[in-house]
Length: 187
Image 1 (cartoon, rainbow, N blue to C red):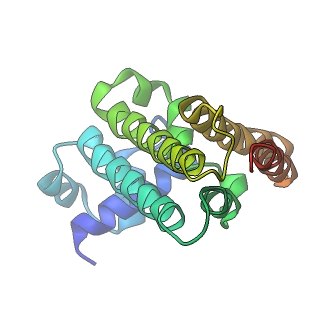
Image 2 (image 1 turned 135 degrees about the vertical axis):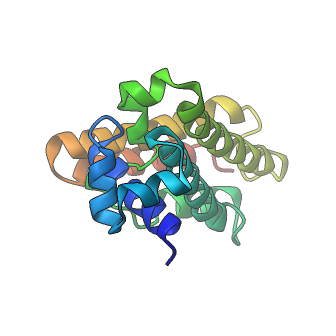
C-alpha cells in the first residue's frame, strides 16, 4: 500500500474512532507509519486528508448499500437486506458519526460528502419504494420520499441508541420496528 493510501486509510479509521476534532496529524502519521514530510507531500494539511478519507468512506458506504439495493427480490426484500446486513453497530455509522463533529459540520467541503451520501441513500430508498408501489408490492398511498427519510432516520437513530446503551439490542429493535411498519404497507 502506498504512503498516500496508508494515510487515507489511517485517517478513515481515526475519524470513525475519534472524529475529526479528536484526530491529530501526529496520530494519523503514527498510525500510517508515515512522517510529517510524507503527509504534507501528498496532502496540503489535515482538512485535505480528511476530505479524501471522508470521500472514500462515503464511496464505500454507497457501494455496500448498492449491493443490496440492486440485488434480487422485491423492493421490500432489498430494503430488508440493506437494513439487516451485518454492521459494526456499537462503533456507529462511519458517515453518520461525522454529523456530530462540529468542525465537519462547520466546513462546507468536509460536510458535502456526508450530506451527499445521505441524500443518495434517501434517493435510492425512495426509488425502491416507488418501484414497489408501481409494481403493486406496496400500498400506492405510501409516500416514498418521506418513508425513505424515515428509514434513514431510524437507522441512524438506532446507532445512537445502541452506542448509548452499549448494546446492539436498541439498534436491532429499531430496524425490526421500521421493517414491521414497512411490512404493513405490503400488498
